[in-house]
Amino acid sequence: MIPGQFDYVRPGSLDDALRVLTEREGDAKLLSGGYSLIPLLKLRLAQPELLVDLHDVTGLDGIVETDDELRIGARATHRQIHERDTIARYPLLHDVAGGIGDPQVRNWGTIGGSVAHADPASDWPAALLAANASIVCRSQSGERIVAARDFFLDTFTTAIEPTEVLTEIRFVRRPRGQGGAYTKLERRAGDFATAGVAAIVRLGEGGTIGFAGIGVTGVSDSPYAATDGEAALVGQPPSESTFRAAGQAAAAMSRPVSDVRGPADYKRAMVAELTLRSLQRATERALAYA
Amino acid sequence: MATQHITVTVNGEAREADVEPRLLLVHLLRDTFGLTGTHVGCDTSNCGACTVHVNGDSAKSCTMLAVQADGATVRTIEGLADGSNLHPLQQAFWDQHGLQCGFCTPGMIMQAAWLLEQDPDPSEHEIREGISGNLCRCTGYVNIVKAIQQAAGELQAKAEAPTGTPAATAG
Image 1 (tube, rainbow over the protein chains, first blue to last red):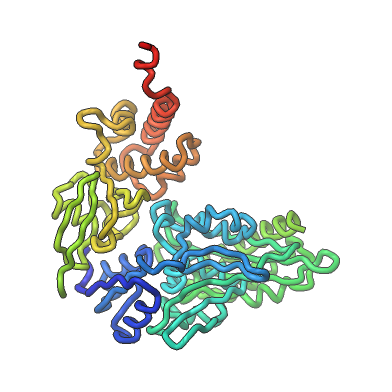
Image 2: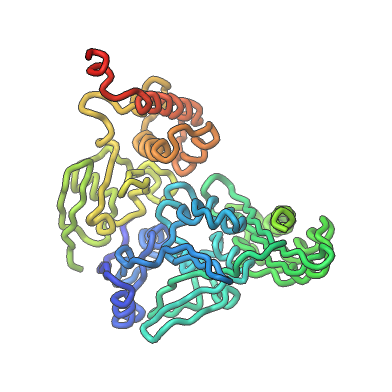
């Protein structure tokens, strides 16, 4: 398969990239690792007139903790994230980064590319939703911060503007008593998730659940935060029956379609089960980080 | 749409080409440079038959544009052997019968080479994880894993052998 024709530029700085995006508003697509965009170009589902390769734009791949945040640069590859010592303290992100695609995909694919691409079955969006992450978008007129829960609008559609570059993802620094986990079902190694559930559990007073986040992928037009499942958890003890109730609530919010990965009711049942498993592992990790 | 002039160091040799931006790296290697050892399998980023190393990291060359590799160092299956001496991985695939039809083999070997550069002594599980982006429809992977284990042992033995031993003992 051969992509349609396009022009290609490799700006040397973020400012140059932003200028090109503004000059060619709507005609240009950003290229990061390429493992999301190039398959679409080859299928001619995407036919931009111009590709703006961020290859030479430095300073977008940092992974740093500030006093209150973990900040991951958009150009950090899945592998860089998975192998970074800091990320070992963020088990949800560690799970996701180590399980995306296959080793070659993780060598080149980037978190920012994956998030901006917003495939309805991709892994990072579920984690960002569960963790209530923030997404930093830069344009020539400045920077704005979009909550993950306001970012994923529809299939391959996000709140990012054509003149913006997604530069960074920000997570709240992990507090004591919090754990996370990501569990996905794949038909085979490296396939997109049939269903995937990211969960965050923070234990509060008396061992009950003080905060919970659930992000679900693969079973809707767009990854979603399972707010009904979260509501079923807060204030409850972290027990299997609580988790099962949350799983049922998370599954009830899914809108799966029957396809090669399975019938809709099977996928819905899997959301409930994967939610249970992610909540159990997240709780174990929260207890281990008391 | 204008072509672009690119320079890519392939297996140690700087090579230049004028390419359309839409040209895929695998086609640059096969059609422009004549290095047909890299195979096009699924052409959808799944099978890994087109795996090469770009700046030292394994990549699926059907999922990278030639222009992205401008200025990069690329290593293909043709760059593994030392003259007529097979690379330990190539020899091990031969010895262990790590192939049947052979179509996946160049990508499988390049991915295994990258894996052993990252981790010279991987467990069987780590080998299987490491080649999870490479599909083989013939072997069932058992002999591929054995071949990678054999090569890992040989490469480690080679790395541990004191260099210049003959001269040292001769003195």
